[in-house]
Length: 327
Image 1 (spheres, rainbow, N blue to C red):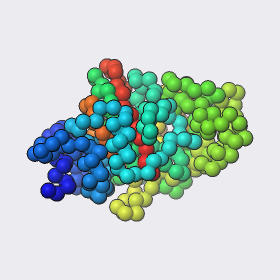
Image 2: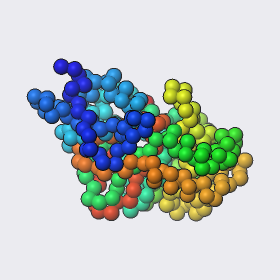
Image 3: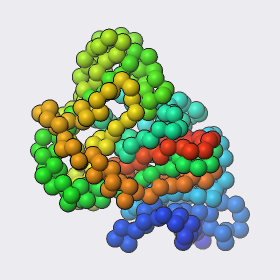
């Protein structure tokens, strides 16, 4: 029996699934219904690591649906079974999250009514995870979809829509700034205090750690402005030979400390981005994304370079999605 026979690629299980050049996005894997026993996801992944890597490289996203994964501990076992090295969510991470067990964290703990814009995990840092796992422990009633989009598709469409902007972005690079408080604010998607972000209460140590991440700190009363960059707005994928959209142009968070979102992202020379760029990019994301309606037990594996993700507001509680990060 071929190892791949532990998995089944069902048709129509995910109606919003897309296809690019004949490759499905995301690829959906479920237990093979003809297998004589219950298919354990951890064992299936262990037996098919090369197969999984090939699918992930091809599509950028794999949804495992219908497997008996019910708890954070189960999810941690799934992550361990992948063989991917752990990426600890430590210095530099701005998202509010809590460690649950092993390599598992809560997904962003921002209030459920808030929209979390499209982003690559920790794209502002020189070191970021290469792969992400998400797990639905509690299925949401309504809303709360995790949306995913292919980075190179977004780049190509933005280059068609705003060629002058994309050229200028490539030539100049981008600078990001956000204000981080002395105390954590869990009402914000980027609400970790500077003490949590840099894992110290010493301002000098914080500045040293920030500098290693390419960040500059400007101290304010009861807060600090974190300036990141200049950073390129794209990355060239040497293997797939295309450019990917790797920036925070649409990263407008509801954050009371950052009272002027228009200054959150600037060209490296300090000039503002064209007024229509962010809105047009958001529209392209809406057109190209797959909005994943979570089912309890779902496990989603993403290539963090190839795919951006976001969260839609939750209309009906509860919802509990967990995350894990891999090198």
